Image (cartoon, rainbow, N blue to C red; front, side, top):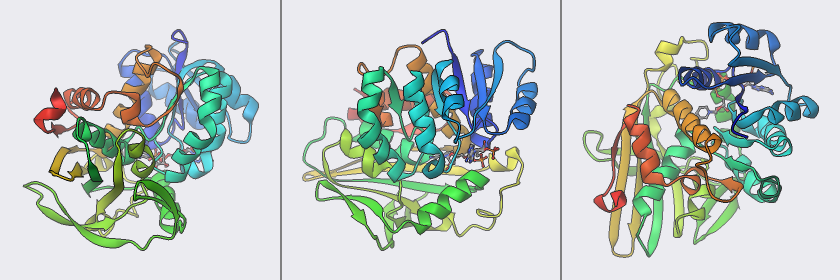
Length: 348
Ligand SMILES: NC(=O)c1ccc[n+]([C@@H]2O[C@H](COP(=O)([O-])OP(=O)(O)OC[C@H]3O[C@@H](n4cnc5c(N)ncnc54)[C@H](OP(=O)(O)O)[C@@H]3O)[C@@H](O)[C@H]2O)c1
C-alpha cells in the first residue's frame, strides 16, 4: 500500500484544505477527493497545479464504484466530509472494499459505534486499519484519557472536559452540531455499560487547573469518548463535557463564511480527569486553533498507517487504541499545537 497516494475525502472543506496543505507541505502525494469536481480542480491549482503529486478524483456518496476506484489508489483515506451521520457509511465501506487504511474526523457517537459494530470484521478480513475520531473533539479526550489512566486500577469515572473560546463553526460543523442537539437517542456509559436513550443535559462544574479554574459545563455532550474510551480504559463511568459559554459566544453559529485567519483564533484546553477508589489523576492540553490541531492529528495518524506504524492487527480503533497515547500527544506537542501536562507516571 505504501506506494499509493493519501486520499483526502472532503478536501474542499475547511478541515480537508488544512489536511491537504499539510500533506503537501510534507512532500506527500495526495488525491483531492469529493463531490464537486470544479472546486477540487481549483484547490489542486492552489496546492501546486500540474505537479504529479496532486491529483483530483470526483466521487459522490451515491456512486460506490467511483468511491471504490478512489480507495483502490490510496494507502490511506482521510475522511474530512461531514456530517458523518450522512457521509460516514459510504466512504468507510469504500475504504474497506478498496483495501486502504482509513482515518476520520467524526465526533458523532453513532457513527463511531457503527464502525465498531459493523466494520470491524470486514476491516480485519480486508487487512485494513480504521481509526475513527482522530480529531479535536472526541480524539483529544480519548488520547488524554488513555495517557492519564495508564497504570491506574479501580477506576470509577473518566471525565473529558473541553474549554473552548472563539470556536467559529463551519457549514459542516454547524450541520453536525444541529444533528447532535436534536438527537434524543444518545449513547452514555454508566455502571460499566453502554446505554442508549434520552439524556437530560445538566450543568456541571469542572475543575480546570489555573489559569482557567472551575468552569460551568454542559454535561454530557454527545461525543465519541463514551464509545472509544471504555475499549482501552476499564472504568464504571465515562462522560464528555464542554464549557457552557462556548455556544453562548456571539458568532459561534453565524461564522460559516469567516476567513481562515479568523477561524484560526480559537483557544482551547482539553482535560481528562480519572477518578479511582483511592484518589484521582488528571492531564491536559492547552493551545490555539482547534482546526489546525484536528487536521494535524489526522495527518499524523495517516502518515503512521501509511508507513506501517499502526496497530499490529487490522480492524477498527479509537485514537488511543491505535497509537500509544502519551507519545502520540508528545509528537503533536512538538509540532507546536499545544502545551501538554501529564502526571509523571504517564511519561514512563
Ligand atoms: N471532531 C472534531 O473535532 C472535528 C474537527 C474538524 C472537523 N470535524 C468534522 O468534519 C466535518 C467537516 O468539517 P469542516 O469544518 O471541514 O466543514 P466544511 O468546511 O463545511 O466542509 C465540509 C466538507 O464536507 C463535504 N460534504 C458535505 N456533505 C457532503 C456530501 N453529502 N457528499 C460529499 N461531500 C460532502 C463538503 O463538500 P462540498 O464542498 O461539495 O459541499 C466539504 O468538502 C464536519 O462533520 C465536522 O464536524 C470534526
